[in-house]
Image (cartoon, rainbow, N blue to C red):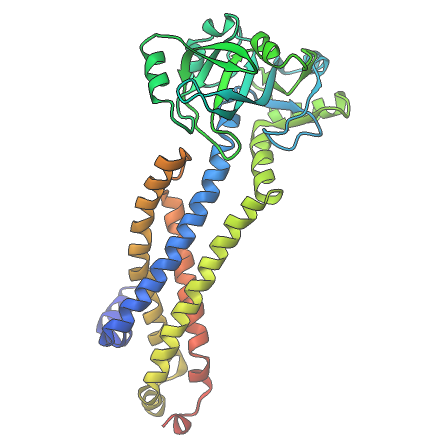
Length: 391
């Protein structure tokens, strides 16, 4: 290894010298690669925000196994299944509790702007801790009161004054379906692609807001297991025991179920994936144009190397050296600019768009591959040419 390092240190950096010789073309190339990286970063950031924003409630649910309707497509389209399936689930060894949860969307009047917007309403038994959200668990007694709800303070929209009043201990009232409700507490989850925000209340208050829904028809069942039981095995037993009108998923499968819907069954998931692919292809084309121009401009120099006995491997090394330099230097601004764009997006949409180390490494690897592919294509003519034909 040390011998290889010494050999590289003694090697003349032809790739760097060729790139830096044409400074204008070099800067244009770096700008093109940075643009491609920014496009990939933004598309992957939006895609990750799509998945994270729509699974934050799933992650906070305190259940090892979830029961839902076979017709359920995602959290926005849960459908219902018979509540008696929860009582039947208690017969399975290892099941500690089986609690119902009600979920649906409804338009409510913004207490500050008085505009109508869609929110997700979640109802459950306030005598049970159903969510791993400390703010909710501290206010379970409050939602036992009639027409009382908890409001998501990270909702999308103008709620600054209303949130400030609730934080000061002053209840805020508004309307849902001509019914006056009181906001007595706050929690924080955040907006998603399907809802501007969410409300949490008791199961009894939920049924008052949705008089057409029967208490015997639930949206979701949260099953907690006794210590020492494997969720996958208990879920398998539940599938065999319960009827065909109930789907059984572990918590991990439930989260994957939501992600799969957005990735495969909606146009938005496909668009984000396609956008990342387009950014990659744009980068390949830009780098290919730069390297191809460079190879053509130095054809006689490469011919001289071949005539002197240098093999194609050496010439490829020069071009690949240029590709690596372009990838690394182009990646730096391509990773810095998205930091500001992510911040701007978070402030404008309340979506969880953040830079992660894993994403940065992924885009860096894609940039390296992008430049290597371009370099390989650019040197095809160089590898097959005879030195005499290149003068």
